[in-house]
Length: 422
Image 1 (tube, rainbow, N blue to C red):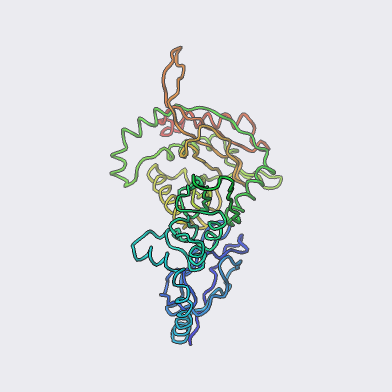
Image 2 (cartoon, helix red, strand yellow; image 1 turned 135 degrees about the horizontal axis):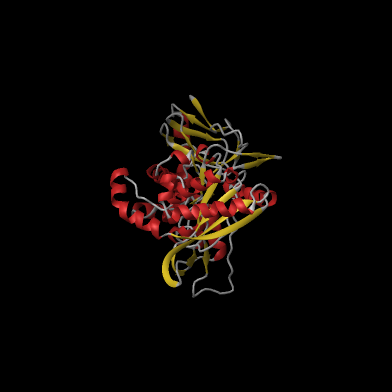
């Protein structure tokens, strides 16, 4: 037997430990080199751990949900595969036969070409079989929507039936827990609930938001912007822009450009507090808040002042794809001097965004809606967007905050200002 150790990747200096999610292989199963064995969640990113060698997974040292540190051994692979391959296979034969009814729902779904979300893990399949439930009736929270043991226990406790309605969590992904409500034929006295531990990312988000509110003197200033000029410009050049750059011209690039324009005029908005010092940054790293299945993440557009509209749109598209796949790296989210949060994507009309420390300000962008406005004594309809900028009043006075937001408004209502730096 030739053993190869599977270790936790090197974590960043700011990350002391991480959590193992779910093993994709069982002890005794064959693995290919570079095949992803498990994902490891830190408070910032999810890291994939590939198999360092082909062979058979001889031993899983740390189980699902275990806490690990850099370079810790979490599994062992028999690269020759002779000893480990035979024993688990033989040992698994009897349990497999004994639990055939339990495995039936998963096998049936797989053989029928059903979706991955209809497949239950072995322990979950056994519980579902005992309760007379099908994997397809239970929303799965495991990888690719697979039903885990926890899902099965929650479903059996809540009395899930095929007719049960599902209460959405607000994010269209099976990676988040779903709570099933009683169907019309069930006892309305049932009040199901599900207790789920916070992920490391969610706990970190909570910690940072509380830190922000407890250490910053947060104040928010508002303004409204007529988006018609941006919309007309975007409509005029959309086809040519897409053809030339291979990406659509969105609104976020305009907001980024307008923000940088204002930060240059009022550098304190781009500054941060370090003890009793104010650190003025001579660069513009703009954080773009992105919703992901794991929670809110804020990847950084570095040197945004040097980026073209096309550069910004391509990078934002890349961040969105990475966030959806859980592949944003620590380097993508480290740093930042100012942030933009677009609640308008979800229909928000107004909000007061929370500063992302150690930054001192954040811009909240909202839904653009046709509104009745008064111009030259006449009521006209204009596509309006409410802007909100939260700032740390310890270093940013109301004058700079208000004028900074007005500078953003002016740049959006007359984009030519961006060309001449006016």
